[in-house]
Image 1 (cartoon, rainbow, N blue to C red):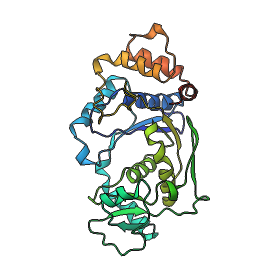
Image 2: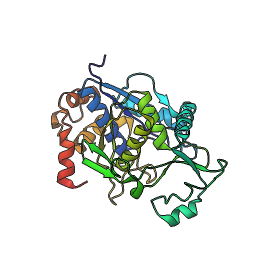
Image 3: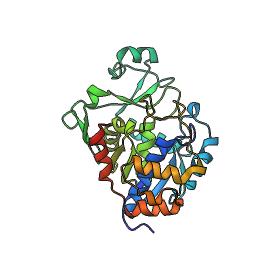
Image 4: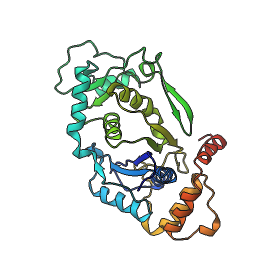
Length: 296
């Protein structure tokens, strides 16, 4: 039984099997939860069918199990929670925080990364339109700041850096930002340990949490594993799946990458022995030291 209020999670998308970068994030999240005597959950973020294949759900869960990363409670599939996302949208609409946006991809590319608010005051039909969350320009003096456990203070001026952001796409699919925030609240998540590619999403998620009256969470963004070309390992870059037949070696390499300094004496040891050492010797601050030393 968990001995603390810590609740962490790993939330992969079934767009392919786990690669080494995914394993590093899963391991960091798992060990941090176990070190604190907390609960560790797995959630499948399968709300973008064009990018996903359901066959990978079983593959991902098997990879986690073979590496000894056993989760607590039942796995949640976001595809089964669409009604909950719509309820949140309905609430935000009642609060007059949502507006329809008919801007095409071509126009959005022309405006750059920051949405310019073109549809804010227009009477746009909900049909074939995206739904955006209004970003208050004066929110917390214009800035949203998170205190990341690895990167320290990270701030965005949402009105200037992102603009009003999408919660439901024109094709009717719910956004990652909305689904993630809703399910973190539903599952009682207190700590999120994930890849640094999602650091930029955190201020938007914190802003959305505030709009919905949700609890805040503690964030930690693990530096990205990159290939020889300096690209982050990703399914889009054809990163190789982690082999379940090499689970022991994979864990030792992941611990080394996380700057945990596993001893050579456990290299090649059974998965259970490696994880037992890792749980007892988990040094989260060593990840921060890696960032400071390498600038990643």
